[in-house]
Image (cartoon, rainbow, N blue to C red; front, side):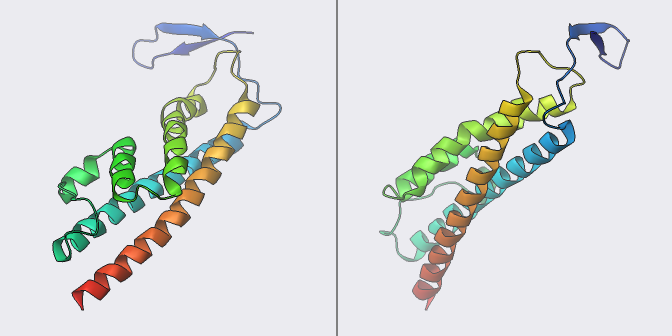
Length: 167
């Protein structure tokens, strides 16, 4: 059985797709996994931005501790994850977290672009395994939240350093 997807405006057909296989993993459960994966990735981005802001504050008090962060708060807010990771890598080149963040970036992009779309499409290509997608989203969620926990520790250390410099 084929279903037709309509664009909602003129009722014209966009394409014909095979129904999604929802037997092994419920679509609702998949959506939940994607949401928490994306939320974790968003928390990583915010933690990176906070850390970079704190580094900038530390540099104002002691200019030799970190690389110079020339971005304003507004510019940091608009900086994508990949660029945030590049700045973080320059600031803490020996951090064990860098490789994990770099591995997270393509997974975050997959979550945000491909996986979320799969959640809201009534049908998908038959060559996509929802089981494989679900497993990928689980791994992305776990990686994101693990990175976030480690970034919280880095931020706490930077906050402590800032407080000690301020006296």
